[in-house]
Length: 471
Image (tube, rainbow, N blue to C red; front, side):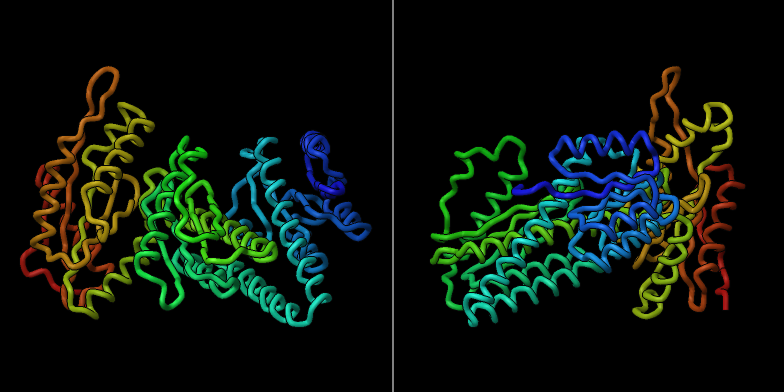
């Protein structure tokens, strides 16, 4: 840093305000520390800051109100919000207003905070350097001015496109298109993989006439380098000295807690410093967008997932059911539903305690995830009740599946200090009939489950003969 970067720290808790401001000063930053929103607003009116760290629950003016004013008056100031409790609406609003990050105080260790601050300022420095670079080139040469104006326009479009929630595919292909349109390349590749979940994407662009063997060599190079980066301890100078398929290659990795990606472009001639800088800015914005997408999916998942089992919850089940009923009607495909209820679950809770009851619920949920197809929809309906939607599955096939599940569930053993615990389920099966509504399908499966209970539990019962459709 050629000069000390200025940080505004607004924290409602005096003790944490002192600790965090001291840590930031030790890192070499100039810190202005305030304890409420009105003081923060006054500080913003008096001077410009490179970064603002804002407590969401500030008295006077909230962190979100300050964020909105900062982005309106000083759009290049990075903003990090932090709060004492997770809140879905606040997190989404903060990201949409342009916050760099949204942190929980319970997870805000000083070391982690220092890392987030450094990355936010690095992004600001790169963006600032890019703006200054293009301003200088515009003054120096009119022809280059037009080209770099186009580059800035692309970056602006990139920022606008990444500012809204995207799917993985939209983000992935948007980055590929942006880099390809911004740089003069013979070939471009982007390969992405999930770290904790199975998600792999890749895309390539190349100029017409590029030989197939050269493209194949580039793909091998990109795959091998990503593999080395993904394996701890493998990123050694020896391993990274892979034979380059092009004389000149620009490459960068970007990663988050959930994913790792490698992007590379090649050509015969040297890349200019300006091209390398532009490439770095695009990659940095892509990494920030990737992190925002993961956070957006995480907070969105809180609204549709059961907190204990991780399965879809009751509310989301009814949304999926309406869609599946519509699909079944449109394409004339069967749709079946299993309604599972744990037998004697109250006895387990009363004798072993609710903590052990939770273990039973999670064990059953884990087994259902392993035993069923990816297309099947598993939900925790409530308490000890679970439902499974089976698209494109006739009721006869659903009956066979239910019997297999019942038998295997009865064989599950949960080891306890004093004795092993086993449990059973009663399962009701129903199929969507002509004219039957979604809630009619649920009622039919529920009624079948109660018949299984009445038959002695640990049973499977299907629909009654001649069951009528609900008009």
